[in-house]
Image 1 (spheres, rainbow, N blue to C red):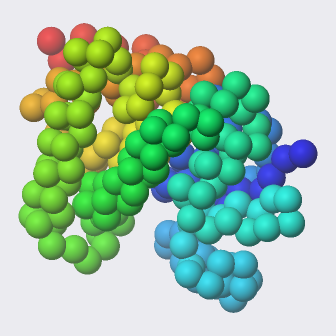
Image 2 (cartoon, rainbow, N blue to C red; image 1 turned 60 degrees about the horizontal axis):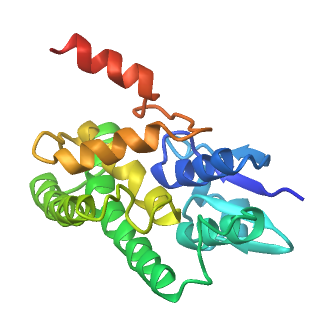
Length: 220
């Protein structure tokens, strides 16, 4: 059984679904949506599928999912036999993951919005968005720094989870909006670890680990 993803290649939220599917080894059907400049996500057929007019959209098991955190949870529950990506049997871990899924919406509204302004010229108070994004980055930097004392690198537990997938793209893409990672060493280590996961895939603006290393070496 597979699923259909209504996708836009430059969307960080769409990339979350593509990335988790790749890490789980799940094949799916992809429908490209002309988000820009075509505004196809607000066309009549797309609004009939998702009245909110947002992407991504996942269609599977006779249902339509329109919220990215729900898609991540469904993917992990449906296709991850190990239970590590969404450890529902561990109440504490499950609750912590839920908190990071909510936090990922804050990243989308700050760093993600700033990136849309930068690459697609969407109207925005860019200074306010960047300031809010840095506040969010400081929160995750503090958490990841504290995790080091537990010999941990992931947001929750000793294995990457859907919490990491949910937060990764708009942090990794934030330099597109002039939000750099120089002041966040723990975040840089986490981003590097994410790129090292078996099955990791890229998107425009997010490079593979060896490509990233080459860029770093070139800038020394």
